[in-house]
Image (cartoon, rainbow over all chains, first blue to last red):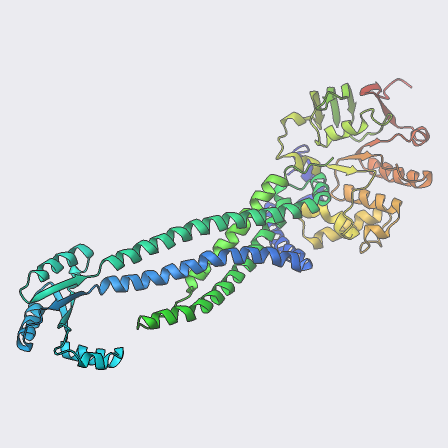
Length: 326
Length: 223
């Protein structure tokens, strides 16, 4: 490996190391340096933990937002699937006529199922649930119409196909009014997009912040080891050799930071899950947030390690080279 | 071994530290480099160890023009040069063993292999029993000898010393110089920068003298 003294590796026998040995020792040294940087971190636990916590907690917010978006996507698609058309029938129809109409609709290929809500049953339910029982008694006749809940066939559930179906239903003689509530679906979609975009922008900003914070911490580390780096350069250490321990420090930040992000995300989801459940109960549905699955946890971990590595890489590239022996 | 051809070095700001310096140190030769502070001794050593590049002229080591060495290759050049400093530049938070082993670890030795050679190197400078000590626990002369052990542990063909006896009393200085003589005897080229004229006078080695950046005497006069 001597540039100036071609014969040196033969002249001084003891200095000679085979290429294979060099290769093996490269990895052994890597492992040693990795452990050594960990030891260094353990020696200053508070400072290291703070950087790790910043890394982990910064990733927690985007991770939680991601979980929320993922869950809302899931319900969103549920609701999209179940897009129902509500049909209010004319009041003067007899039970018989309603039953026939229901049967006729059931035969249509565009419609999967029809659910009939009898106006008398609806009134009884309303009387019990609303507390207006006595007021209702004052009415001479049932003010409620018969209602049909129509689920379109699987291929008619897109907003435009459902709209066409809605128009044809409105044309029916028995139908007073029909509604397809697409507006709220579109609103939900828009809201989801907003959250998704916000999540991406926020995640990007926080990732940049993490890189800068890790980079700055490593920069301080490098500066505090200025003398040591100079001596190493004097005795012939390559920049790569000097940089490696700092890069491993960045990796360790990422590894521990990632675990902190897992825990904090789980905690945050547990925290908001009660609130979400309360809301979903108000909507009479059973819904609870699903947290990160194994794959997503691994991705989060990789991102954390990647950010730690990137931050330290930027710092060592910029600062190790500028330290030159005097 | 070391050849300077019309080498000049002007620092940013216009200070000329070396002015057309030429000399040739033969392989296996030992020489002193002397001059007042600011005469250019340190600059000359820095040009050899590639801490600085010359403004003009050529520096050759073993026939290789250092101009051809790019910055990525500098570490490999430094592995061939044992360097000793007045302030010895030891790592104070590392043991003597770790300090001396550093050049070997950088070259890819395992600690077990390095230990044997560290032991041998420390024994040569008379500190074979101080492996586990920290530099702070040693005297100035001992610290300097640890620095020498580190410089020679990977058996470089060339030794450079910058004021190695600067902080030592005459008796210790003589001991240090004796060490250099030992290395020189086994074929190592040695260049020692010093302004300790008494030391130079006692030993009859070639003496390169610098004054205000010029080589006023390269010791090759017929004497």
